[in-house]
Amino acid sequence: MRATITLLRGDGVGPEVVESAVQVLNSLGHDFTFQDAPFGIAGILTTGSAFPDETRRACESSDAVLLGAVGGPAGSTPAGSPRPEAGLLALRKHFGLFANLRPVKTYAALVDHAPLKPQLLQDVDILFVRELTGGIYFGPRQEPPEQFDKESSASAHDTLVYSACEVARVSRVAFEAARQRRKQVASVDKANVLASSRLWRQTVEQVATEYPDVALSHQLVDSFAMQLMTRPSAWDVVVTGNMFGDILSDEASILAGSLGMLPSASLNEGTFGVYEPVHGSAPDIAGQNIANPIGTILSAAMLLRYSLKLFDDSLRIEQAVEAVLAEGARTADIANGGQYVSTSEFTQAVIQKLCA
Ligand code: NAD
Ligand code: IPM
Ligand code: MN
Image (cartoon, rainbow, N blue to C red; front, side, top):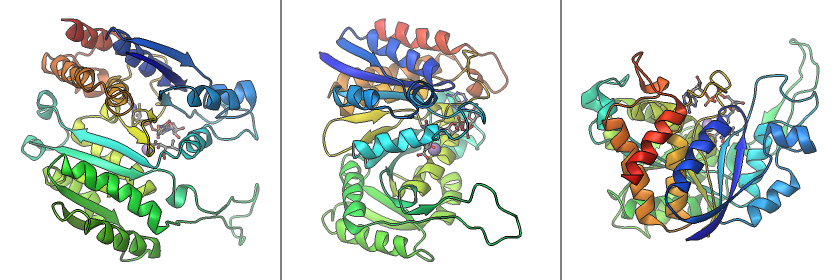
C-alpha cells in the first residue's frame, strides 16, 4: 500500500522513538513515503513558531502524522519564544482532533515486576477516550503579569468550557468503541463541583440513550483516580474531558509498566490522525538510546489501524511487541533494576519478530 506519513520527531527522546517506529513501519514492505517537518523546539529555532506553516502544509498533504514529543528544559528556546507545547495544541486544533484514544493494557511478562500486586493486574484492558480540542486547555485565559509581588492581587486564570455538542461527539466515540469491546463506558467528571461537569454528565446521559446495549456509569475524578489503582480490571472504556484524561492516562501507565509503553491516536471525524506516545520528551534520558520505544511503535500500529485500515499489519506489530517482551527483552524503564537493552536493540528485536 502507498501512503504518505509526516514525521514530527520533535524534542528530547522524540527523534529516538520516532526512528524506532519508522524502522518498524519500513520492515512491513509497504510503499510508505516519510516526510520530516520541524515541530516544537526545532520549529521555534528555525521559524519562530512551534507549528510552522510549512509543517502544517506537510501534515495536510499526508495520510497521517507520527509524532514524537515536544518540550525541553528551561532555556532551550530564546526568551519570549512561544512554548513548544503550544505547537501541539495548535496541531490538534487545526485538524479538529477531538478524540484521543489511549489504550492501556498489561503484559503478562511484566506483571510480576509491576509496582502493583500481580493479582490486581489480571485482565487489565482499558481504552481512555480523552476529549482533546476543548475544555480548560482552550478556554479563555489570562496569563500572569511578567513580574508581580507575591503579596499583590496579581492574578491569572484558565476557563473550563464545554458545549453539549463537543461532549456528545466524543461520547459517541466512546460508546461506539465500547460496542466493539466489553460494552461498558465510565464517564469521569467532577459534577459535584463543576458546572461544566454537570453539562458533561447530562450530555453523556442523553447520548447513552442511543446505546441501550452499553452500560454507563459516572465516576467522580478523585475517587476514579483511586479506583484505577485498586480495581484496574473493572474498567472498559473511560471517557473524560481534556485535562482529566491527560492526568489519568499518565497514572494508568503504571498498569502497563511504564509511561514509555502507552500509545495514542488523535482522530477527527475522518481517517486522518496524529499518532504519538502518551509520554513527553523525557529530557532526563534524551540522547542516550535508552528510551522505551514501545509507546511510539504501538502508536504506529494505531496509525495503520485507524488511518490506513491495515488491520493485519497493526495486529502483527502489537503481537511482535508482546512476543519480544515475553522473551525477556527490557528497556531500562521496565527492567526493574536488572539487565536491559537499548532503544535500538529493542526495536531490532521487534523487527526480527515481524520478519520471522
Ligand atoms: P515525560 O513524559 O517527558 O517524562 C516523565 C518521566 O517518564 C521521566 O522520568 C522520563 O524519563 C520518563 N519517560 C518518559 N518517556 C519515557 C520513555 N519512552 N522511556 C523511558 N522513560 C520515559 O514528562 P515530563 O518530564 O513531565 O515532561 C517533559 C517535557 O515533555 C515537558 O516539556 C512537557 O511539556 C513535555 N510533554 C510533551 C508531551 C507531548 O509532546 N505529547 C507529553 C507530555 C509532556
Ligand atoms: C499529552 C501532553 C500534552 C497535553 C502537553 C504537552 C500539551 O501532556 O499529550 O499528554 O497536556 O495534552
Ligand atoms: Mn500528558
